[in-house]
Image (tube, rainbow, N blue to C red; front, side, top):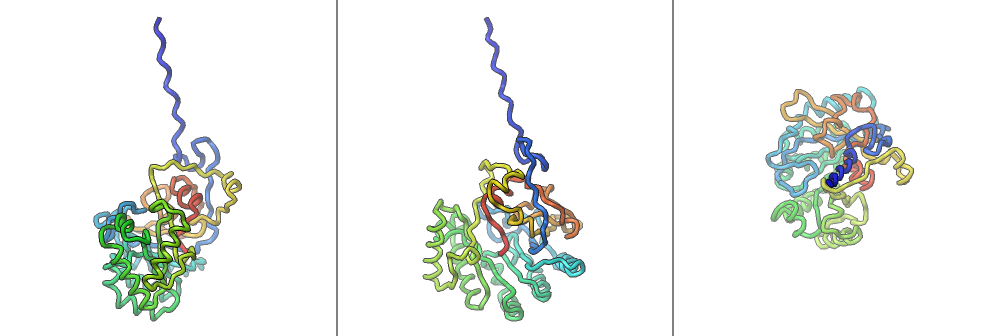
Length: 318
């Protein structure tokens, strides 16, 4: 007698495929834009470093997001003014923003219009090439400009493992110069890097700041932001409409409830507005070419939405 082979088990539907429904058929959570408070500009994915785990895959060779020209920034600032949008803060990210030759001009435009401004940087040679103009802009617009310096770990060994040999000291030198010049500075680290509890990480950064004479409070979550790791292989749950009540969390606390990001793709004829700073390559998060078009709700249809924003509790702005 022949025993029939067992039928293969039916595979569950893949997660993060349908913007309206989860793999289990539940209604996927979506986040409405309550008010546009922070507008990010990605200055381009080119960077002076090739980190082991870059959120956006920046490197000295990745120009998938081209250098954003100053004229693009001016156009969106004009739209904010024309439509009376409640934007309070302008953020610049990359890549390394100071690789972009238009960065000083973009800062001058944004600061000249009175916006609070945040720049994410590794504080290395690209930034220092602009140090004279940067110092002049900070002096001309006191209290408006903040530099957030990427320092993945309080110890040079783990930081350099991520960013390359010798980068820790070069970043510390750049941060020391910023402090000497009176810039507002905060630090971005990685919460799970080295697998230390948050309290241990903050204590380590506190020792570093004290030893280097850096007047930052490592217990302050703004002065020292610790971002979750973005392991693309990790399995994360999909966020349903019911999750808000289960987690005791409001949709208003998620980045895309109050922010958008402008990018210019390589060879594109115009810039485009994305839902957030982390989802630079997924076309479903392209919301249009204007801020008005980009005001529609965002379905949380990506693992980063769960891992970073809802469950990780991270936000890129202050």
